[in-house]
Image 1 (cartoon, helix red, strand yellow):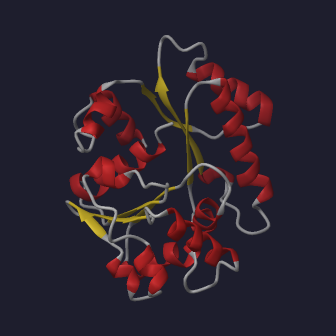
Image 2 (cartoon, rainbow, N blue to C red):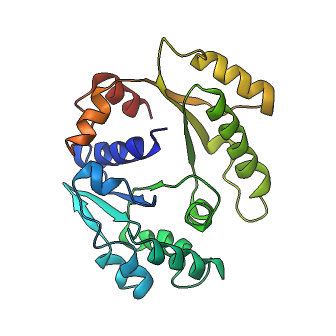
Length: 234
């Protein structure tokens, strides 16, 4: 839906163009940041899991001032990290501890690019988050997914950690005049179904220049006007 694209470019805008000390944690399998930002798959978060504490610094890569930590590319190592974390978020080598280790370096912003689903790679970072930005597209499938995510954030997770309702936001991405569902109708359907919908930070139109810039391994922000406007709104 474009959450990696937005997380990477918001991070780049903050760190490089606004000089805000920022970290991006790219946790998909495989992580998207190396492909889009011309980084490597090593070092990665495995450095922290092997040496909790001092391994955090070794896990960091930098893109023009933006610090980035990526998930291990190896499926076995990725699954092992989830298994280790499942024993408890307070474990020194857990995913929750990895995210919380960012506090030791005084970042003004930490952006978590989290994978689909409800495994530990998604849930542990959410337990450390104070804001959620839901990136969606104006389609029926994405409407259902957004409702499911709202239930998870506001009901199922509230006994462990509750992100305040006023800190949950929506970005409607890849909107098009050809879409059967408009951003307005999407928002209205979401409100009718769940009884509430997060404020919309930006509606970003589909533009083929966005994946083209990514395939050139370049940040999109500053190169595609409609996308850049959306990032600034966020």
